[in-house]
Length: 432
Ligand SMILES: *Cc1c(COP(=O)(O)O)cnc(C)c1O
Image 1 (spheres, helix red, strand yellow):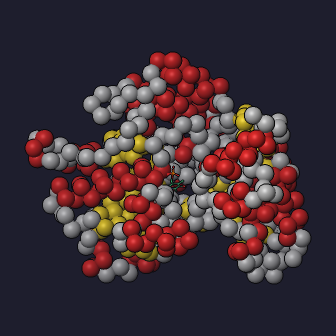
Image 2 (cartoon, rainbow, N blue to C red):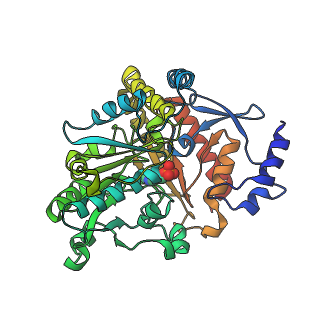
Image 3 (tube, rainbow, N blue to C red):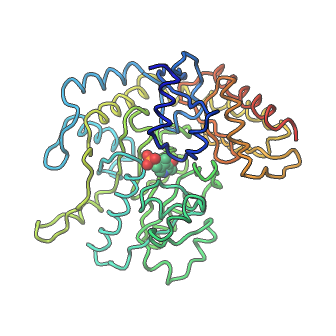
């Protein structure tokens, strides 16, 4: 089909996520149809190339069509694409679990539960935490604490934890109550009545993503771990965005030497190729669910595609690429290069703040006197559309531009990305 036919059919039948569909379907709008990917680059249906500046919504790790990952998916597809994880098991899922557990300090996170998305990885952790407390004599511990500006996914349970009003308010009637805190000071100030029913607290470690690429103060994660230990509350880390090298270490929690009670992994787990998620937890949690069948301690939770062999094969290959290519070592000088480029970009009159955590950057744009643009103007989105014409694909969070490239980006590709953002900022804001 030609691009125009594809666009017309899309506009007729599809409903895209987080998208005002009236704008999408409007006569002047030409949705970008992507048809190929190679390394750092995405290719549209007319053969134009773009640098993938947000790793295809924070998923891609080693670049598109990495030969090793593609070969693993092909080989697995030729053997077994899917089988049930309820009552049977499969080799890629078993081998991946071994590999994942080995990425954490010995005898800490020893159990792996598979699902499909970041949201479901969070749902699993919530249900495990609540049921654990029921099984160990604390049925009152059935609530959670979460942070302002947090994002943990869009299914109803994960969304209840979220702290972004625009996503949240409309669905308040189907959300469960959450103890919402801004920072450690607020957490320390919680009264006994609020703390007593807490099963756990959930956080995006080091940096909050969808909330606007907001970095946490150094030491917060370590302090949070200590608070959880003191209060008997589980620490749930949402590393759906930060996992798999994005922050410069394999997992963000390594920056502060913290091991959580639960960790949710998704987006980058399969290298950005297949929907796959994993929730890891401790042996202590797992043990509490063991008993006679009639005791009803079983975790009654699962999805049709749990332990999907294709996804697990892709994830195994993803981890092998980290080892074979020395991805994390290669990344360190590129992080330093990005820091330099961002410092230069920060001199633009319309850049009001920049936050970086490893290979993740959030760039705030505002009027040259620092006044925020009215959010209804969609300045960030217009800048990203302009940057697209300069060969960079990314998506803002309101007026925070996001640069979160695959870890395979080279120095010159970083240069071109930041140049495209600069050009976009100048075109749209023009120093105003
Ligand atoms: C994307 C994201 C999620 C949700 O993952 P999905 O795969 O979109 O369901 C959860 N937490 C964080 C931190 C995320 O960035």
